[in-house]
Amino acid sequence: MEDNILEVKNLTKYFPVQGGSLKVQNRYVKAVDDVSFAIKRGETLSMVGESGCGKSTTGRCVIDLIKPTSGIVSFNGKNLISVSEKERRELTGKMQMIFQDPYMSLNPRMTIGEIVEEPLKVHGIGKNRTERMEMAMDMLEKVGMRPDQYYRYPHGFSGGQKQRIGIARALILKPELVVCDEPVSALDVSIQSQVLNLLGQMKKDLGITYLFISHNMSVVRYVSDRIAVMYLGHIVELAETEELFNNPIHPYTKALLSAVPEVDIHTKKEPIVLEGEIPSPLNPPQGCVFHNRCKYCKPICTDQFPSFKERIPGHFVSCFRSKEFLLESKMGRKI
Image (cartoon, rainbow, N blue to C red):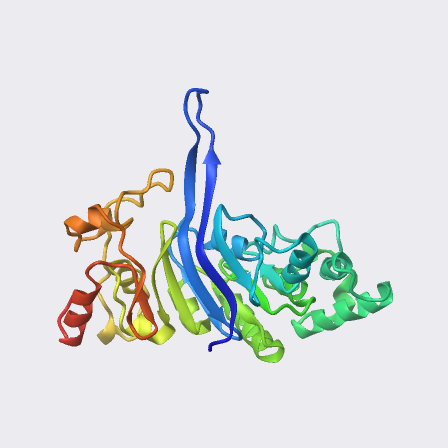
């Protein structure tokens, strides 16, 4: 039996939108709609997709920052939605988040030492302030900061250094699961690799499991063990990293991968241009949510939603034509 640290089943999150008239019934933004996945202990599962597809909302539901509308989120075998408040507090202490914007996620009125110490205070860890200070300095040193920078304020640091402080804050409690929400998208390219290498080293040293959220396919290929592709609140494909890159099945995944820059001009692929606009999550299309932009659409796609099934071992897809695509791929025909 595989050791899953996290299991998410039928996760749904709808945000109510009040109409302009009292006669208008409340509508809902369907940010996450019936999402299921599991993460093995010690692995990195990445979620990719366009902005607004529900990646960040899923991550926040997982660590209990926002309450899901329905579904089950089990961490270490315990459902976060049904446990007592005391037990939920203990469990969420073992799950932390690294936020996207290092400029906005740090309190400018606190020194970086106080910022890193704060989780220790919240969870009552450390006998006294001196012990908490030592723990904070030690963690700052592990993420590449100098202990003497403990008394400085965030405005005196670069974007990369601020993200390192955010990482130190997330890791100070020695969490088992860390949700990384676009942790390098706000940084210069030259700094991104440093932060990604740091996350990889922390994973190796501390045995951390990552849920890594990004829209950058090149980044997730570098950091991931498995990748889940999201579109309009649904996971449409999930597979091991190299399997997904070498054998994509869903048309949306193929379009994403076709936009990844290739160093070798001989292997460069023509980008797949998707027609139309992403539908509004206020009014998603009936049937397959991707059918209005899919050139392979057939009548059943407009009427029914395809089930999320394991088409080949470890490779899950939500598409009515997945068998045809697999067969054509094996025959070496262009899809």
